[in-house]
Image 1 (cartoon, one colour):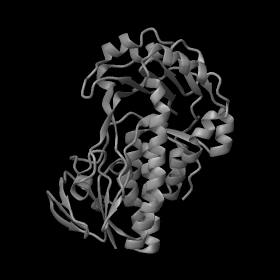
Image 2 (cartoon, one colour):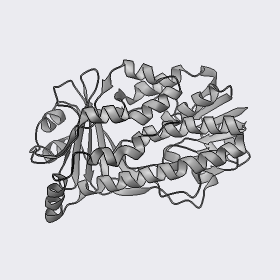
Image 3 (cartoon, helix red, strand yellow):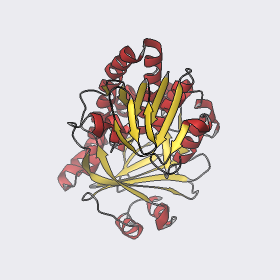
Image 4 (cartoon, helix red, strand yellow):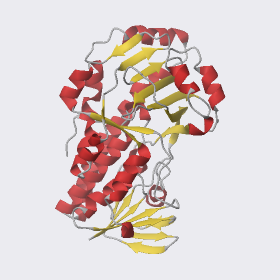
Length: 367
């Protein structure tokens, strides 16, 4: 049996590895000239680590150093809006890990044979029978996995009626700052903007910012420093510690719900199927879940029945998490002063169990 995977990111490589471990021949087609990723940090939450355990890679990630869950959310004045019981979260759900995104790509690549990896290949069209037409010729397979991201060529080819990804109204910046003492992982909310930081095992700090902005607007480091200059430390210091070329900016998009992730012998996974806002930090984790679930169902049940069950299991779950992610981040981007004051007052009165309840559907997954 053969699987052709279109897309060499986290989800695509995980799917290729999951199928290869089950004895399938795999071919990974990647548009970029080489298999790599320009990225900042990545938080792998308990469900993502369990998916990596299914691939035999969980311990390798844990050995690089474990992380704590989100300590809580502060207001722009420095006061706590939500504080989490970190030890209770770890006891209830398991551990977290923080990794440099390219390092996770390298870990997946090292587990795959070089002969299975084809970079610099542009996919032009896919047919439901498992035929892939691309710049290197044609590939046929028993199964095609569309893991080519939010602007998926596979989705456009076989789901032409599907709506395009939509911009959610705010853009995201990510960077890794030099080592600096910080008191755990914290997110700070203002009016139409927020700043989060996560300590990495090597002492460096993974940072992310989100702010309301028109789609396509590029905002440089100098403006970010001005914008957050009066926010509580260590936020101004983290911005002052980096160079402009260390900052990545991307418009934040999500994909409206698809009626199915499957067409013929083709399945979508990851952002190609359910691109979501980063508010729950579940994008990579859901792609990993998709990958191991797809391989397990198809290899056990056969292609037709396995794809049907994959769609039945994964589509409701990922679309639920995408909706929850959209809702949980929306109050951070309110700009009305009365609304943000009401938000801050309401959040500060929430029970300590609020965060745990909101993330239970995501974190409690098992294959």
